[in-house]
Image (cartoon, rainbow over all chains, first blue to last red; front, side):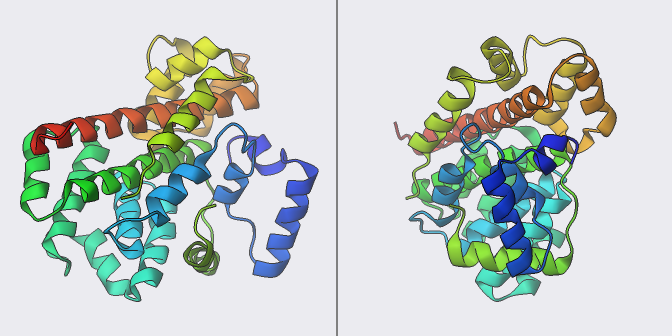
Length: 191
Length: 102
């Protein structure tokens, strides 16, 4: 990580927690954990992210994790794409569906409302804006306004997280460490 | 429906309005990606628009300009939350226009 404080600047209690995580998980502590545990009084990400990803929604957990992976891919954040592809694959119980969406959204075997929503998130993430006509296309695909708001909440959370991952320079983890992290997020969420 | 309105407001209020290592005006400028100069302006513009292009040198240049790591941490967080906020507002405005709500 580009800031030494994010690797080594944590309070003693947090350092002890990291030692426990390393022992129990048998993996190094993921850089995202180091980030959110550094001055959590300043960057309170958990409330927003947990509500967006695990709060009440017509979208499944798998759908929302897939949205996170698509936002990450379109911000060229390999770390977050890998992490949330693993969570989406776990939630769906289907790795190939996630891979197909990331390879080609237009031909992936998903329902049209989700496809239209992912298209909109791709545009918003890449170009920072979306038009009313593009939003009408999402609604016309059968997505409710509430579902659009839920998707925008996921987009908000991951347009923050992916920027921090890239700016601070998260170190890639092993596939096993990402799998371990994915299991934790599916069991416990983001709080 | 998931509702992040309050949590988002609390997040933004904390990073902009309360105590920090970086001056409040500088945090606001990073959030807005406006009104900064020099190495810090370069870093914040990258975080907002294409964070994957941030380099070790970008961060080193800001450190060399006299900012502490905690100040850089705060300003990068502000920049990320600011850009994501503008995107969310753009999305909600498009939704309102498309659905005739609110």
